[in-house]
Image 1 (cartoon, rainbow, N blue to C red):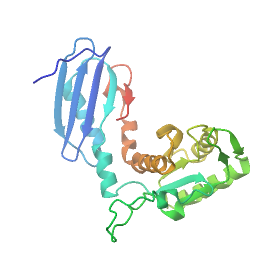
Image 2 (cartoon, one colour):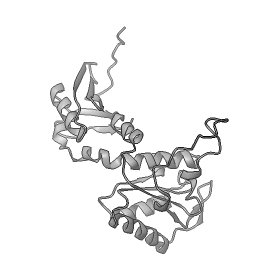
Image 3 (cartoon, one colour):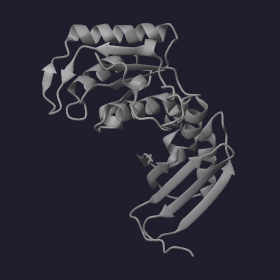
Image 4 (cartoon, rainbow, N blue to C red):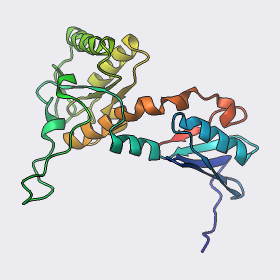
Length: 247
């Protein structure tokens, strides 16, 4: 049974998901509910080409209002462990959170069960001397010297080709992200071509392991998806690029 299609606003709302075999493309026109579906072969080495091909074939004829991008490519990268080599910057004393994980066991009586391996290596996890409490108050200020020291370590790892992306996840940054933003600004200034993910933007939620693992996954697939930023805006719309929406 086909659902009634309700108008959503101005322009086309587009959903696209590049899979391993096909790229699915769905467009809904906001003012009258017009609906278009396109399916094209995927381009695994450069998924954006299939997205652009689907957009051209849809021939929407007017600018896009919204773009929702699926995650099949990134899900496959996570499952197959084909993501970037990562560096994690976290509050000093909490470097082992991704490795300790949770104390619960998935299978209570299975003596052979092992916790999943983190997406970052322990030697690429750097502690920074700073502290924010659970109310967001700064207990230990992040000094310029400490920030410079940590960023210097990250630069060394990048120059030695050990890492390809960076994650910053500081304690209680979901309450106060001042220190995370300070480190991010310095990293982007020193390493403009290296992707940086920060937890206060990706996952500003409580529970340290869940937050750090979510941001690690974001950083892990960022280089893989970076090709989408290089596509010409004119391919997306007539006049301006659409407002992206994560999914």
